[in-house]
Structure formats: C-alpha cells, structure tokens
Length: 232
Image (cartoon, rainbow, N blue to C red; front, top):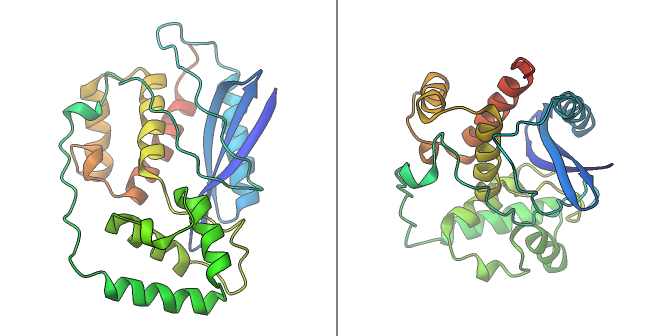
C-alpha cells in the first residue's frame, strides 16, 4: 500500500492536508486533516485514514477509484473525476446561483500585481504557480472572475520569497464537491439527513450556497461523522 498526501488548503493559522491510500493504481480511501501546520494536519489525516481502512467495506456503496492525487512535494491540483451522484444532496437538485462577474477587473488585477511584487515573484514564478493551480501558465486565460479572485486570495496569504512550486494553491470547488459526494455516500445518509446536517451547521439548504471555505468545513464535519460512526 502506498500513501499519498497533498496540501489542499492554507489559511492564516490553518492548514488542511488530504492523505490517500493506493494499491496497484486503486484508491483504497482518503481522509482530510486540519491543524495549525501542514505536518500536524498530515498526521491527523493519516490517523483518520487508518481508522477508516480498519472498517469493513460497505457492500452497498461501491466507490469508483479517483485519479491519483499529486504528493505534497508537488501539490499539483489535478482535476478529480466526479463521483456517482449520491442519494443525499445530489447536485442536480441543488439550485445554482453563481454571482455575475463584474465588468471591470482592473482593481483586482492591480491588487494582484502589488501582491506579486510583495512576495517577490516575477513572470517565471507566476507562470509556474498558475500552471499548478489552474493548468495553464497565463493569467490572461483566467476567464472567470471567481478564479482571479481565488488566485488573489491565495497570493495574499503567501510570505515574501515563497517558492511557487510548493505554495498552497487555491481551493478547487469541483474537488470539494466530489469529496463531499464520496463522504455522504460512505455515511449512507439519505437526502433528508444530509440536508438536515447542512442546515444545522450552516443554516443553508444547499451545498451550492456554501462558499469554498464553508464547503471545505462541511467536508471536515462529514469526516468527523464518518470517524465517529459505529463499525458495521
């Protein structure tokens, strides 16, 4: 069995690491861990994963293996294949109301240039970071304002001299949704229970109403429920 880890979120005083177990190209399971530093977060994720792998397999909830994630050393954010729709909180039944992009991006772009100068990145460093974070090296190919905003927010958290090849990349919403799909499936929750859990913790009825940070928190809460669930 091979273990892989990647940093999936970095914020002031908080790091979230995902650890996954692989055998012959198949993913045996994955878990999230949160702590004040990446090493402690990785240890917590590993502990959760080990507990989960000790559980008997749930015959009623087969899970297709996800693509191999990048190790922490590279922290590449490759897109993850979506999991099959689950009975709880399926995406097709959730309203999607993305905010309209502003017409003028000049303020955000100007702020981004200031932040890049602050951390000491030139064109080469920016291109390396964009390639890891979005799959292309050019800022001009960011066609959605939410991606530009995510890029700006991530850069604001970086310290001067940060290596673009190891800096935390922005959250990928598709990855977070796929992960919550998998967790809900593993828990075996129906739509009513999943929606009730969301309403209890966030006072919202749909995952689409959560921002990326809230969706990450939702996944961590589901992780806790999975660990606390009795063995079956």
